[in-house]
Image (cartoon, helix red, strand yellow):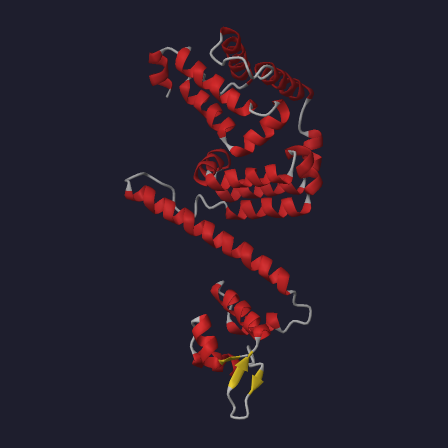
Length: 297
């Protein structure tokens, strides 16, 4: 048992606040001494912790009291929900700090609201919790999907810019992505045409050919010829791609992140992703004329 003064010292809130919580029926003391002093046990402290967390999240005291008095109140689910909300709040704060840092450097940036993808990220988290089979089927594992979500969080500003470019606004992009997640199985079953499937199979074959012997030096003419073939294939089937250091650097960045590393290594063998990066990097520095590099970088 702890006295009201001890609880105040432990939590940082005043004895008067604890007295007020008692008066409004939000947090009653576990016991009163013969002299009328309030005492609080561990269960009361856990309840106080809940109150303070709800309060930190912006709930009014009346709302908190109603939640805690609900007969089927699940403390563990409440902890999980609070953790989720706090993580979203932290992510928003981190993004705001990043925005301010960029503004300090004189960069031209969108407003904080414009590149906020928290609603989309939450939809991805919900999808993960409700569609384990689909995630394992198309991403290989839940861990890979977690890396996918983290990649979006890490590159949120860039993803938001692309979303605005393609959809007009983050809100429209988020709605479209939510629809895709809600109809994911149906879309995946019907989305790929026979031509798209053939292109995907050809790309898979070319990457498999490139990574067939990971002991081969990436600078060898044989490997560089395969890189050239692969890049020509990409250009042929992507009309908006202009081969040069800029685009090759995009490929290098793609195969350098943990999400793609896991997927690529699982498909082509451990170390395949690093091998692809090395092969692309050597091609970029050795096979593209210097003038073309500077023009396209």
